[in-house]
Length: 214
Ligand SMILES: NC(=O)c1ccc[n+]([C@@H]2O[C@H](COP(=O)([O-])OP(=O)(O)OC[C@H]3O[C@@H](n4cnc5c(N)ncnc54)[C@H](OP(=O)(O)O)[C@@H]3O)[C@@H](O)[C@H]2O)c1
Image (cartoon, rainbow, N blue to C red; front, side):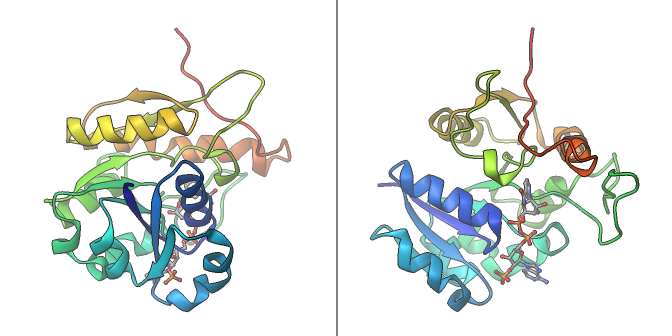
């Protein structure tokens, strides 16, 4: 059984941790305060554990980074570069700034010349980052059921084998995967979250996803 380290006590951490458990993986979930995951652990079943960010990173074969964008680099430091070295790190984060959206358009603290995932990859060069799950709300991340059929997950990263591993997970989780290339493509993928959120902020609901058609 493959063990996934989910760094994050928020909604994305919960949904993906539960998704991995339901698809037959073991999960170690990390937080600065593991005690806050007690309620989750009680209902999560025998293949779930909790610990610090470092505990989850060390125990994992594949790591999921599901923390606030502004804290993502600090969380990598807490997890430990040694614990992350050589591992696939699925980066779900978006660089959402603290200031409020303008007419439903989120503000980012990054630029179009340097994405958050590129910063993370520079922070831990030996980890194999793959951007994924960042372009859709957590309610649709696992087994999305939409009238238009399976939606598209755009991924990117510098390591081809890591992207194959993440594509296999996305296949199981009900997604079509489009590999957009190396880490620089995160400059284009991360802003898709801004686009995805606009209908929601405009009162048109959040139950949508993107699809690549040819
Ligand atoms: N919510 C969605 O539907 C959605 C969809 C796509 C992508 N995303 C992205 O996914 C990521 C997770 O989102 P989320 O909504 O689940 O939760 P979130 O509230 O953005 O993040 C919660 C996590 O961030 C950590 N954190 C916050 N401030 C920190 C700090 N100063 N130092 C260290 N860790 C800190 C928390 O650590 P502790 O556990 O220690 O408190 C917690 O694990 C975000 O980057 C978000 O943009 C979210």
